Length: 257
Image 1: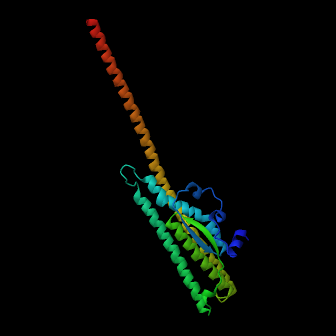
Image 2: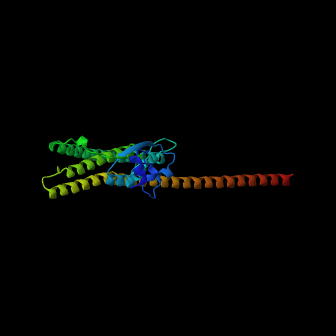
Image 3: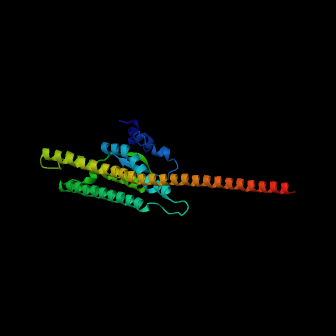
């Protein structure tokens, strides 16, 4: 077992994010040291949920931060203050809100079903032991904060599911119980991975829009630079012609004298 986890169970502080977060090429925290983030602590016990946290939390943080914050900075016209393609940014945010709502509804429903199975079996679901480990997490967006809540619900659900299976309350036959447990775990994993996948797809859409706007601005700046150079050349040529004409007038006056 990870020594950091052992220290936690003995009453240590939350595991720092840099200690539990899987290595990646994103380096979101390093690249955005000035990003406004809230420090949260998520308490988890199921290893599969911890694995999802390690692998996907940075992705959700980066993608939602880019969609909701960075893109608005990129797309804003600094002269007029208007936001290019604002409807597209808004749409991407609404898509993610809807996805999170669906995932929350899924786990809320499954938690109620699991608790009811305990009650039907004459047991109290509150007596299920769930030894957890606290993990530090920095959230740059509401999406990231809600993702931690979703992970917590999934963790509780999977613990209850395992306890139901141990107490032989999932089904009347061992074979069916195993099938129900495996299918339920698979569904839970798919739900947890749905948000990272959806955030990445929306991130790619908004990034494409931002790239187009930045390219247009680059073309506009080049065109403006070329116009400025042409105007400068014309001004110099005009000045040269004017000075040349003045010099010719002075020469004629001198000869007339």
